[in-house]
Amino acid sequence: MVERVKTGIEGLDKALNGGIPARNLVLVSGGAGTGKSTLCMQYLVNGAKMFKERGLYISTEQSDGELKKQGEQYGWNLWELEEKGLLKVIYIDIIKGGNFIEKTREAIKNFKPKRLVIDSMSTLSDYMAVTDYSKQSWSITTIQNNVIPQFFSEKLMSKKILTALINELKNFDATALLTTELPEQGGQLSADGLSEYICDGVILLYHTTIGGENFGNIQIRKMRYTSHQHGMFSTVINEKGLTVGEETTLIK
Image (cartoon, rainbow, N blue to C red; front, side, top):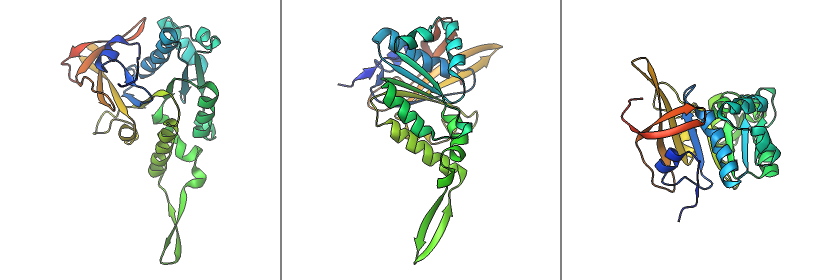
């Protein structure tokens, strides 16, 4: 029997046939304003309030103060959850340098979360190659007794680092959501074009404008270790956060 982690978002848990398989790493991909960060924080808040499970939110884009203030619009007292030891929000400025993977590993080991969010993988793919591993951008290859240095392109370095990060996260007893920007064109489901293949699941968020009205949609494109509904479902962001409604025929 599959052990599941409920998101606490009723419509999403229903589409997942009960929740995310425990210890899965799930990519949450969408454009600006589709609700990626809201869904992810809601996942942690619901875990803390409903199941007393610790949640760790690691941000590479917004400070902990900004995220906590944003939570107020949904009635989430993130300060209170943090005081109770059920939530921790960490901002890591990767532009200033330092080893992101090491800092993430240390934060997880210290807090021991059951639920984890990393927001966002897009920022990591843009900057990690030069901030974390710039000194490792060369490798040595020996061909017919000749030592030949090989330079890794920034794109290749980013992929190597993202793979290392995801493999590192799999070592912990946490069910994780990782956000990324969804390219407007092309067949990729993430900004880096790799995360969708090495993560256990992919949840897509779309924003559609029809006749001057805006509509939100969510779709589970992939989820290992469980069956799930494959249709597209409506979403609404209101004073309670993100809600998932009925299956829709809206075109993304």
